Image (cartoon, rainbow, N blue to C red; front, top):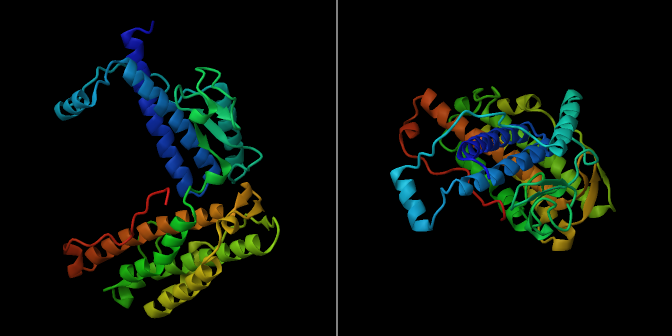
Length: 333
């Protein structure tokens, strides 16, 4: 029987651990360390599931009507001093050691260093690989596990979601440019200290790399996909000196070629595979999610840059409620 103090401490530890691993996963994804992000997301969910169990054992979950009343009145569970909020078992410790070694070499984990992961949704037990037929801790069948697979490291959008976001990007960029002078569009800003024009040039470079990889997967049998990085933001500097229309036209032209390559592909074509140096055997959808993940993060950066530039240059639009320029699309399509 767990005493109330131990249960409260466990709830506090697990909740803070969930927050810590989740925040670290977000940062790893921001640094494009997608396998390490997947490991940290899995660790976060271990803590989340076990925090929910502790929360229920603390008798803080009733029927929905009572839960709503607790939400309205303000739930204030008693808390105690915490322990190590990222306390881990031997498997997670081993996996984190592998991540530490990879980072010391300046790289992400490879597919042969971090396979698929699975978490029992009933008790939070973590397994590497598919896991046993039933959880060794609580007996939950494998169908009740939460997967974190190599192929899902970039995201889980399917062909429809990928094409939708690729197809609307040019219009989104046009709206981000709309109403801004050439001077503002060329002004360095934001955390990367580059202009909006240079950001678009960077997206064009990524689009070209994605299109080359997609062509290889579609036209050859199991090609090797190199993990070389596309040009860095700094290499897009020449776009700063182009006109906004030249920059927009360059993006439209590149994206048009990409969409022409992908348009009308069957589901089987989207699941043709290549061998990636880091992620192993991957389908085309994996690389589609790769470019979407990168592109959407920079489109959001550009929306923030636009907002800040409008305020800095005292443009009237900054004082009006703007529309949402970068559309949201749920992860599953």
